Length: 122
Ligand SMILES: [Zn+2]
Image (tube, rainbow, N blue to C red; front, side, top):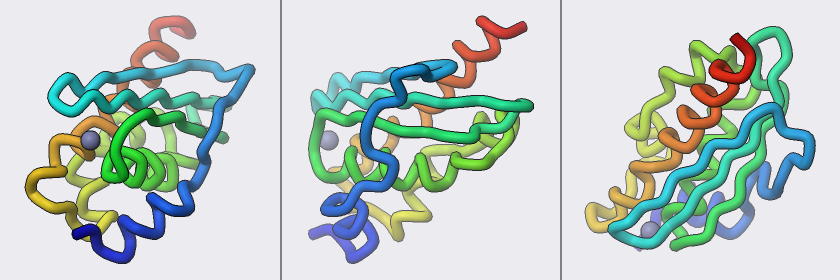
C-alpha cells in the first residue's frame, strides 16, 4: 500500500526525538485520524540548524513528519514557512488517497513552530 520511500521513512524515521532546549515547538492534531505531530526546532541566524519530531499516529503521519524534517533542516525560516504539505507528499513519492489527510499536516506543525519562534523573537 505504501511505496518504498514511505516505507523507508516509516521504518527508519529521520530526526526522530525531542530537542530539550528547542527554540520553538510546533504542534498539530489531525482530528480526522487522531495523528498528533510535534516539531522541535533550533534556530540560528534565521536558519533551522536542527529539527526533530515526535509523532503519535499512523505510518503515513510518521513518514510525512520524517520527510518534513529532512526538507526543513538547514533551511531559512522564510524557506521553511514555504514548505507545503504538497512538497512533503511529492518528496515521499505520493501517498494512497485515503492517507493524504495524514501527510497533510506535517508542514503545518513546522509552520506553527516558525510562527511561535517569530512571535517570541521579534
Ligand atoms: Zn493518519
